[in-house]
Length: 372
Image (cartoon, rainbow, N blue to C red):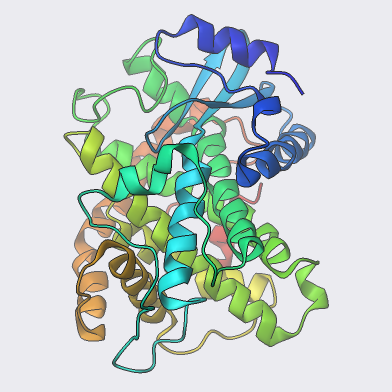
C-alpha cells in the first residue's frame, strides 16, 4: 500500500512534513493496524457526510505528539504524527507494567511493580517516543495494549475530523490564511481568541467521544459489545475513559513543551466535560447505571497511572475531587462561549445536522444532535 498521492503531494507542498509510507510500518504493530482502521473510518464518513470533501489521511514522520487538519486540492487532510500511536502504546505498556490493568482504587495504597517501566516528568516525551520503537514488558500482554491504543487513536482521528466537519478549520482559515490548524500560536489573533480555540477543542472532544465510544467497546472486548456480559462492558467502558484521561494528560505535557499558550483545556477540564455526558452515553449503549463516584474514580486512576510512570507522588482522592471542582468556572466560560461561537461556525458546518444546541434540556439530546 503506497502513500496516497494527494497526501504525498500535500506533504511535499510543506517544508516540514515527510509522509510515512504505509509499507514501512511492519516494525510497529500499532501503526500497522491503524492504517486499515483509519481507512475504515474514512469509508464510513464518506457514506454519512455528503457535504464533506473527500477525507485523506496519512502519517508524517515526527518525534512530537501532534496532528493537524488542512484542505488541499479539494480534499480534507488529516495528518497524524507517526509518533502519536507509538507514544500512546508506550504509555499504556508502562502503566500496565507498574499498576496492572487499571485496578479499582478503593484502597488508600497502590502497590507499584518493582520492575515496571517509568521515567521522569521532564523526560516523559522522549521516553515515550523511544526512537519510534514500541516497548515490551514481560508482565504486559501486547494485545491488551494494542486494543486500547487503537481506540484512543480513533478518538484522535475523529477529533481532527470534527475540526473540519463542524467548521473549525474554515473559521480558523478566515483568520490564518493557508495555515493548517495546529500551525499557529493560539494567542496571536483577536478574531480567534484562546477561549475560541479551547471551545472548538471542547466541541471536537464532545463529538469524537460520541462517535468513538461504541467502537472502542467493541475493540476492547474483541467482539460486538452487546454480546458480552454487562460487567465486561462496564469494565471496558471504564478502561476507555481512563485511557482518554491519560491521553489528555499526555497531550497537556506535549503542548506545554511546544506552545506558549495552552490551546486545549486542562486534562481535568476536558475529562470533566466528557464525564458529564458519560451516564447519557452509558444509557445509549446500554452499559447501565454508573456507580457513584465514577468520575472521581476515572480521574484518580488516571492520575495514579501517570504518577506511576513519571516517578511522582499522587495526592489523595479529596484532592482529585477538588481538581474537578477547580475547572467549573473555566468550563462555564467555554460552554458560554459556545453560544456565540456556534453562530460563527454555522455557515461553515459540513455536517448533515445543525451544530449542537448549546444547552439542551436533556443530556441525551446532546448525544443525538451531533451523532455522526
